[in-house]
Amino acid sequence: MSQSATMPQDTTQPDSNGHFGPYGGRYVPETLMHPLKELEEEYFRSQSDPDFQTELDYYLREFCGRPTPLYHAERLSKELGGAKIYLKREDLLHTGAHKINNSMGQILLAKRMGKKRIIAETGAGQHGVATATVAAMFGMECVIYMGAHDCERQALNVYRMKMLGAKVHPVTAGQQTLKEAVNEAMRDWVTNVRDTHYILGTAYGAHPYPLMVRNFQRVIGDEARRQILEKEDRLPTLLIACVGGGSNAIGLFFPFLEDNDVQMLGVEAGGEGIKPERHAARFQGGSLGVLQGTRSYILQDDNGQIQLTHSVSAGLDYAAVGPEHAWLKDNNRAEYSYAKDDQALDACLKLSRLEGIIPALESSHAIAAVIERAPKMSCDEIIIANLSGRGDKDVQQIADKVHL
Ligand SMILES: *Cc1c(COP(=O)(O)O)cnc(C)c1O
Image 1 (tube, helix red, strand yellow):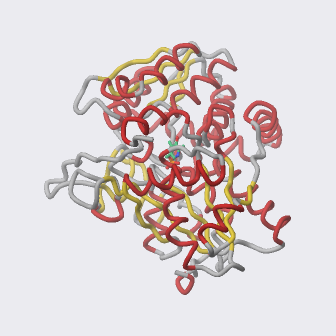
Image 2: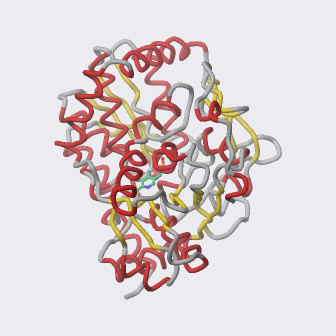
């Protein structure tokens, strides 16, 4: 891994059309080109406006609870008997996961653009809850598109969004899950773009979303870098994060990309193993294709039909991966592995019992990789694992699977 950590500096930014090498871009119908360009322009203007950053910093600190601790997991490190393990505690944020970093950034952008209405897609409901939260806070109308099947599986999050004043729109097309919810959100956006902003929830989709979401999430890595230098006076050996669309992982990785000695490991959902339709590990069974606005590794059959996916964690259960990760993989700058459902469940219980922290099932995939890697490393090496969210939302599902 370390031998390949030489990436030319200019590849850490996409080109002007949002391409990370052969990945990314903007594959959308003509009607979406204008809104995307308008969004891109306003986003770049906000980036060079210090007042915007000041306002974002204020709400991230006072409302969301940043900075999050970089916590030395002493008992886990001792138990595994190798590397010293630190956890970046995104689980301690308001609404329980890193998603609010992005929702907060985008709603401030929407406000700046004079939009009055917010729409978003959600799978498990975490991004829907984060978005409904910031919409409530700024008094904006909010509509969340969610597959009808997901609405059933995640009834508690549906109710949460409604408590926050959002309208939840169940989508009954196709498999009635995240992919269909994204399609509906895009359809709404085209129709209502004049007063509506679409808060996309991960580092995916048409340019500028992958770039913009990464930049709103890089606060994770910026803080972690500063914190580890304060605590250890050196950079970590290895970063580990789970990869759904890829926003928490790229948020952690990005500020370290030019530190060539820092290794990076993204962990995908291995589900029940790498068999068609039983996992969501795009770098294992995926191939190059275009889905929902961007070009990346996609789980598809020989005819280009999108395959079914499976994971115990809804947040990792998507057929495509963010384009920047595809680029980092091709450049060997980051490595990608997977954890299976049962490994994630074991990791979840292990962290709960050793550290008193119940992680989200998504984050448990990163912990599973920590459990595998740490013992093979020496005690003077450091791992930073991103604890992207807390596990409260998953307790019922875990209870159905694991008898205690
Ligand atoms: C949504 C979610 C993820 C996956 O999304 P990314 O964009 O890949 O980060 C991971 N962890 C938690 C807790 C989530 O809610």
